[in-house]
Length: 122
Length: 107
Image 1: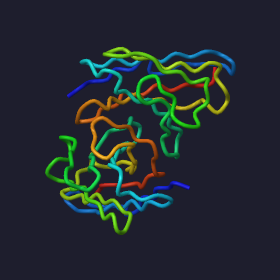
Image 2: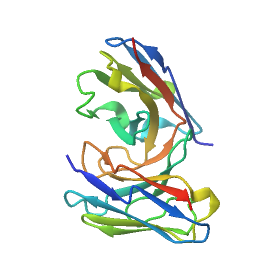
Image 3: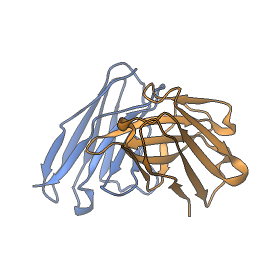
Image 4: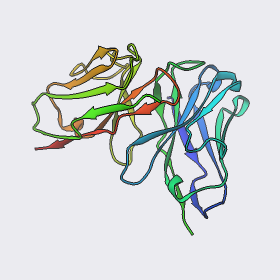
């Protein structure tokens, strides 16, 4: 069964850092691009970042560009989101999502993990 | 950035009803549009992509249509498990953008 499982969320102080992980099982991640998408409390879904298959390119939302870095380790079947200079407004549930393509756009997120909660507060 | 506008923001329905959600893009995106269903505390699920193609395993009571800037998602007939929030998302260009969501509530 295709599954994604995020981890690494928790409480961080403003200005702090966290690294989220997303472990895939039931398939090899090497053939696909992946997205991180977040949902702040009471808000809708917001796209955060994407990494292409092979990891040669990544794109970021303006709200996180320069602070977040997305990476992948195909040998470990794992995606990462390194978050620096965290802000209160980064508080959200973060979802890892597999796309149906190697190099978007275009491409949709056809499998999502259950999410990991990040809280940024002093 | 491409702005996605969904309407209505919420709709009340009974089991057996038909519900239609609309999504408008601020510029043409061909058929590069996805629809997702999201229930509280759960992972979102892909329903339709692109525009009018049902994702594997999605019941046929869901139907997507449209191209260019105007899209619709219809659920007919609504079933008890369909009460959730639905989002459209353009997959045409970065940054990917979502509509604000439409909650289908029990009447």
